[in-house]
Length: 171
Image (cartoon, rainbow, N blue to C red):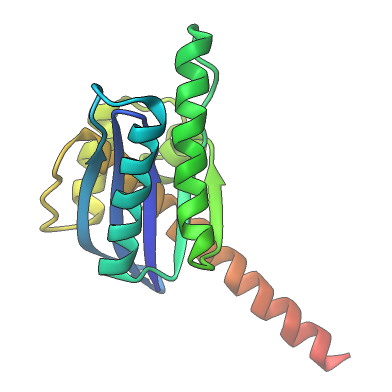
């Protein structure tokens, strides 16, 4: 299954595409969509929209996952980040992709094994879990971590769903 991970941000929205087959993960691509700070907020959101749209068009993922964000100290920054997150949720949904959201601690725990791992640990583990992967930047590394997290949890949900269907069919 081809999965898209997104790490939303107004300046840079990281993206990562992986292939998950059973317990095997394979890196396909990664990068970041940048917005021009000289544009209006609406113009910047259009840039994010178009960039994510292009990634989906180029790579045709079957599912997407987005990192949840927590409130920052600056309410204006939090609001802008929320709007970028809205774009990250909207574009895959408009392509009829199932979209899951994961808290940062859940992503860290699934990739590193510890919910409070540092960025360096996460990036190192992404490289280990996806051998030969050349990570474009910190935003794409985070997006790949989101995709890896989704591969772990979505696979478990699919297996549970199949087991429940089989169990229901026997009664």
